[in-house]
Image (cartoon, rainbow, N blue to C red; front, side, top):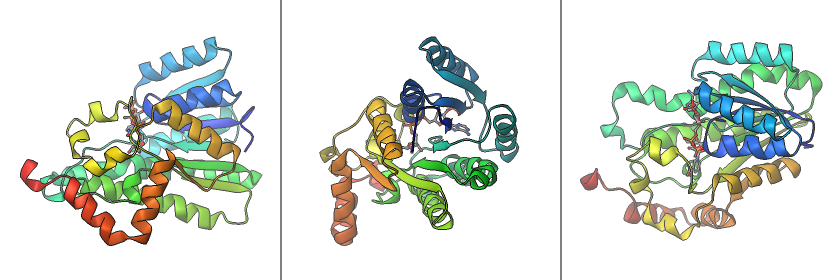
Length: 267
Ligand SMILES: NC(=O)c1ccc[n+]([C@@H]2O[C@H](COP(=O)([O-])OP(=O)(O)OC[C@H]3O[C@@H](n4cnc5c(N)ncnc54)[C@H](OP(=O)(O)O)[C@@H]3O)[C@@H](O)[C@H]2O)c1
């Protein structure tokens, strides 16, 4: 996928992986639409990108609401045209065992990333299909490949996003649209763990064998995935090795996740 000159819609652009991806794509000549709820953070990023000579538009929206996604779709299609690239990086959610999770939170856990990505794709897909060109990339979690305890609603929502991504790839087979599932390891400088305070200590200790990456390193991985028309990518590569281990030896992976993961007694 050619990045220079492309129109990219990026969800979760106010922080973390989405923000770094917007910066890297804009630096390479993409026109970026920045979407998240925090208007001020998006406006700051818009100013920064424009000051560096790039093209960016901040569009504050809560993507858990279908009508907000429709409003975004109407504005982008009307003012800027059909997107070439969609990046789904909006995500939230505390890690809890199911029996610790308030009933009303179960639905919120699915809002982002799953519904946000489904709504965003739905509003742009007809136009992208009509042009028969484009790239859809989901920032997925390793939790949708290697499951660990103590994060039930989070894991289920990441499986939903991964499922949506795989289903879209099947739907769009033999069209000009490409679909990629991108898996980053733990992000060292992301706000995620500050926003979801009980989460970090629940990462299974076995995960420490996988080097952490910065948001920028993840964003550079996304750039590579776009340039190579990749269908799937892991950053860092050690995460891929763990993924293969879990595919080939699922019982060992289950045991290690249980042995080194969150226990109900420390919840
Ligand atoms: N951090 C990690 O170590 C890691 C590793 C692997 C996978 N991931 C996955 O990658 C995704 C992004 O993670 P990150 O580290 O970049 O997290 P982050 O820094 O917390 O960023 C999440 C982004 O999602 C946006 N967002 C949340 N709810 C939204 C909503 N309802 N509507 C629109 N935007 C919304 C947030 O902006 P506003 O608050 O302004 O709306 C923010 O820009 C998550 O799904 C996460 O599970 C993260």
